[in-house]
Length: 386
Image 1 (tube, rainbow, N blue to C red):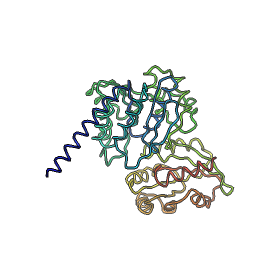
Image 2: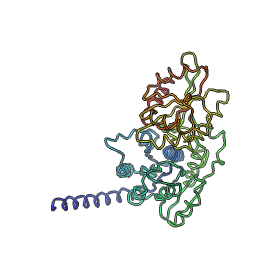
Image 3: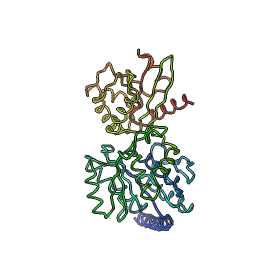
Image 4: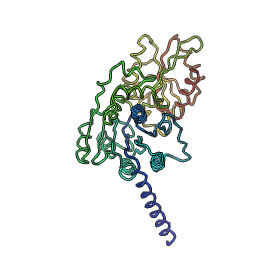
């Protein structure tokens, strides 16, 4: 009993010391921008930091998504190697690192998912000057749901009291506005119509107008003009989860592989599929490659239901839980003749199965999960491009 009490006291003391140290380091950083939201957090974090660097601001950024990375003042970056599961205490180390480098601005992607951890991250660790909520979509409903109201309220836990917040969200904007009023946070809404087709085509990968508009608005707020910010954003390295299109020839057939694995909520995925198909209207053979994961079954089922709104020729299931998802697809109006269960598969073997189809030109749309088999397929196509 006594040992338990002593152990608890030690933990409390260490917690107090850690909190006080973080407070000291936090005060040395003039500004922190905390990027939250359902989709596009990593991209927006990178875009904002790139725009600020182009404007002469000494800026460090840290992303949390598909490949957590620390981006330095000159735009170079290094992967963050984790020996354990992701933990919000990681942000303490980043704040300490940024403070010691005497940066002007630190751009942090929120790494918390549950409502409680989102609140703790902002109010006990980050204490941001500027908050960003990219959007509010139906993802992680098991942790933030069950509905969109719950998801949005969860995201609003990172609103900086008395600070400023930017968002590109439309549907749930009134709820964000209401929560911003409660926390006395000044709210700005970005409009994707402020970004032209020509401006978004300047990126080497598929970037969403709303991400660009949101990032530009944050940069403008900090005194960086659009032209300067965009110039920096074009040079920025995309996140590993950013959507890209690769062309390759395989056994005399033309294959276009569009990687959208990281857009793993149904709304974003459907948008990307529609967008990419418009880029290649002449290609009639459309193949969906759905990467499944054992710990993301709910997400895979969401995407199967979404596919009822999409025209496609074949559905190739890859990854951990293909048999379960195939059964689910059959029960949700996807014909068995369209489904190919590949299990865990290499990029080479996937192509060997795909080229057996009759078409000489095919558009492959990778959806589902960038982690696991999806990431393996992306690396294969990237290596073929080199």
